[in-house]
Image 1 (tube, helix red, strand yellow):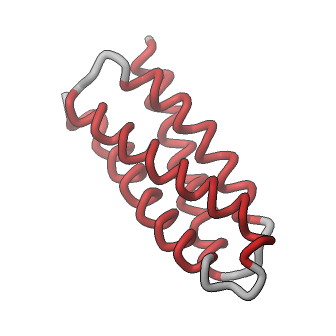
Image 2 (spheres, one colour; image 1 turned 180 degrees about the vertical axis):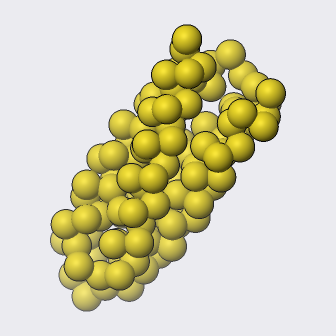
Length: 112
C-alpha cells in the first residue's frame, strides 16, 4: 500500500522541511511583520504535510481527503511565498507547488 504513496509522501516531507526552513528564515528578516502571512502559512503547511504523510504511510482511508486539503494549503503557501524575493521563500514556493501537484494526484486516485 505505502509504495503507491511514496512519491507523495516524499513530496510532503520535503515541503514540510522547506516550510520549516522558510518560516525560521522569515523570522530573521528585517520586516518580520511583512512576512506574517508567509510564516503562518508555512506553519500550517508544514503541519498538514506531515499529517498527510503519516496518513498515507498508514494507508488510512482518509488519506485521499486529507491530501486534497493538503494540496489547497500547499497552493496557498506556495502562492504567498512566491511573492517574496528571498531565496528561502522561492525554494519553499517550489516545494509547495510540487507537493500540491502530488497531493492533487494522490487525492484523485485515492478517491477513485
